[in-house]
Image (cartoon, rainbow, N blue to C red):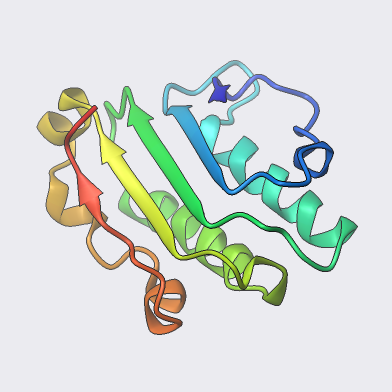
Length: 134
């Protein structure tokens, strides 16, 4: 799924009852609403956590594109919120959240900012690798 930040509705993941792997392509260019793609990812998972008691998702990959301006507080806030949502019991089957960065993300931000962004998941034993292999 590719989020540009302009979506007005969340994706109904529950329609895919055997979904075990999911990959989001997140565009970090802000759209005219002021949101970026990670906002839509958060909204999708929050909606899912309010709709059901279990999600069979095992592997999640977040591909990050077009990170051109780095606002550390905003950035960390978004990722911490994702960490909170994915740490809920509904996502107990989750085993890996892989963050993959485009070359533009590495150039403007640096890979070191992506380490330790998901501490609750890591504490629960979920693997949280960060790579540059987009």
